[in-house]
Length: 80
Image 1 (cartoon, rainbow, N blue to C red):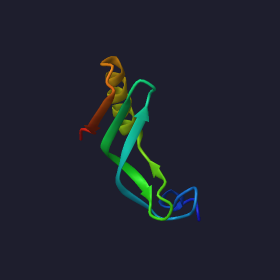
Image 2: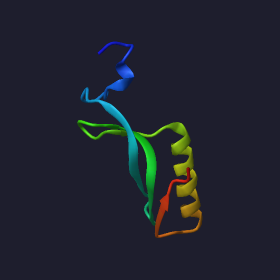
Image 3: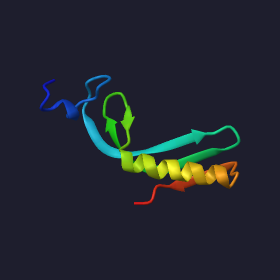
Image 4: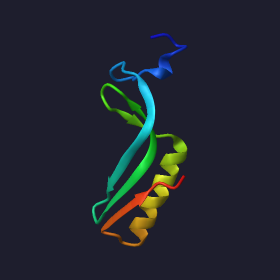
């Protein structure tokens, strides 16, 4: 793996990275938040997933809002 194409391969197993979606789950003790349709980079071999900073910020806001509402279970789709 060269520096030129290193970002195309999984850091864990060397598999090929592809753009896809994932589901993010947060269990914060008093409740659970599930965020579906999260854009992610996914390894085609081991399934490891990475989300970008923009998606992470949106997820953090969703989880924070759910905590403030004292939600027990909240299921959301990440807005585009």
